[in-house]
Image (cartoon, rainbow, N blue to C red):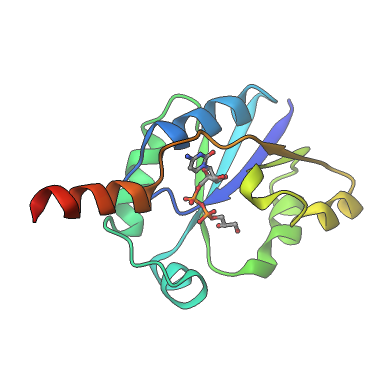
Length: 133
Ligand code: C2G
C-alpha cells in the first residue's frame, strides 16, 4: 500500500484542484489531503476562505481520489505527518517546486506536479467580482 500526501487550502474547489488530486492518487493507493485550517490560512497565508474548513473538508471527502482529510495548522507539521501517516510520497503543484525537498531526508519521494493553467481561486473571485459589478 503506497501512501501519498498533499497539502492545500482548496477553497472554491475547481478543476485545477481535481487534476492535482487525481494525479496525486495515481502515484499510490491511498491519498491523505492535509487541509489548511481557517486560522492557518488567515495567519500564515493571508487567505480569507470563502468556504470554512468544515465545508472545504466535506467537499474534499466527496472526491473519489481522496481517502483521508486532516487539518494543516502549521508549516512545521509536514515531517511529523509523514511519520504519523506512514507516507511514501509527498506531492505538491509545481508552484512549490523545490520548497519541500528537505522532506527527502525523511526517506520519501517528493514530487512536484505541473499546475493546471488558467484557473485559480483568486481568478474565480476576480472574475465573479467583475461580473457582479
Ligand atoms: N493547484 C494546481 N493547479 C491550479 C491551482 C492549484 O495544480 N490551477 C494545486 C496547487 O499547486 C496545490 C493544490 O492545488 O498543490 C492546492 O492549491 P491551494 O489550495 O492554492 O494550496 P496552497 O495555498 O498552495 O497551500 O503547506 C502547503 C500549503 O498548504 C499549500
